[in-house]
Length: 191
Image: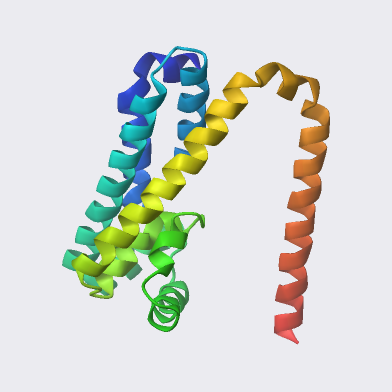
């Protein structure tokens, strides 16, 4: 936290921007941490929100441009490093084609899609004028969510410490339930 406080806005911008071009970073954690610091007066909360939003949309649009210029073959060649296989890319393309372009707004909230959203939209030749407003809307909602979570957590750190064992237990139960659900679906799919 001390290092983050030291580098502040540039670190936040870099982590969020890199995630938008497909490089996995702890962007959500950075936004929450910066917002918590802002709640304690170490950073400005409006500045954290603005930096987050600008970096998120800039990163996604750079990702879009990379996807548009490099295309599908480059995504498949380099995507393996971040587990973007041909099957996953094809599934994402079908998802955009069948569920509509508005999924771009929601993709910001899905880990994996958040990092590859722009790349995939660009590689599938989705027109930028259709992509950009949806990406901006998703960026606004995503920024608002995580800045709010960080600010609330920062303002209530003592209460969170008091209940940390219960919070960790609840998180562990949710993670176990999600893992069991995934394994069940996977097992059912193999039959």
